[in-house]
Amino acid sequence: MFDFDGTLVRSEVVKTRAFYDVFPPEVRPIVEHVRAADRYADRFTVIEHVLRQWRRREPSREDIAGFADAYNNICELHQKFCPERPGASRILGGLSAARRPLYLCSGTLEESLRRIVAARGWTGYFRGILGGPVRKREVLSRVAGGESCSFREILVVGDTRDDLEAARACGCVFRGIRSEVTDFDETEAVLIGDLEELEHLC
Image 1 (cartoon, rainbow, N blue to C red):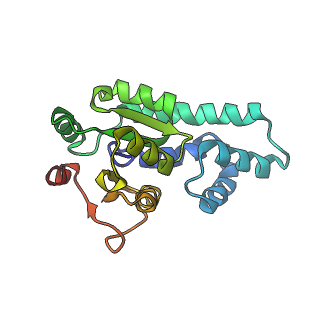
Image 2: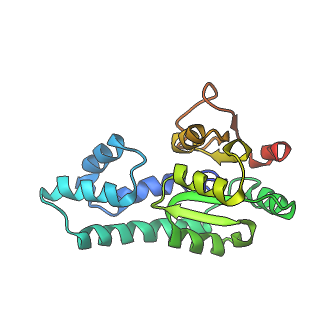
């Protein structure tokens, strides 16, 4: 099971920067405060908290949805066309050709994620493309159930602690990819710099 942003494509920084792009410059300190409180909060939660602190009132669903759409549009455009991680297409193609069941799991909203993956020509590689708002632990449970396999038979590849902790909680094998937002080190998990290093594990 692969994470997407920072793991298969170089989009991790844009997903963070987009929170600042959708709000006026004077709101930046509030965005930083909200993001620091929970780095893995989804876009709706972040936007709701920012709006509440900025406007000092309860935000409407329409306000939250409007900012979330703006955020998603920025991210989706970049995710479709940004550079892939070195070796991404080759490793996905090779594993798929070898009939390895591949799954994609991302915090990106699932409808958007499917469009992004289709634009990159990767849809056929994956047995399942699973996006937000479902949490990664739940996705791992679904994959194990659907494949009738144990968690120990699932290799999770990701670049953040969210990926690492989901794998640990379920007892899956984990390999970390170094990205600009990686928040764990070699003392906590095996870290690799190139996706092609996965070949001998699969």
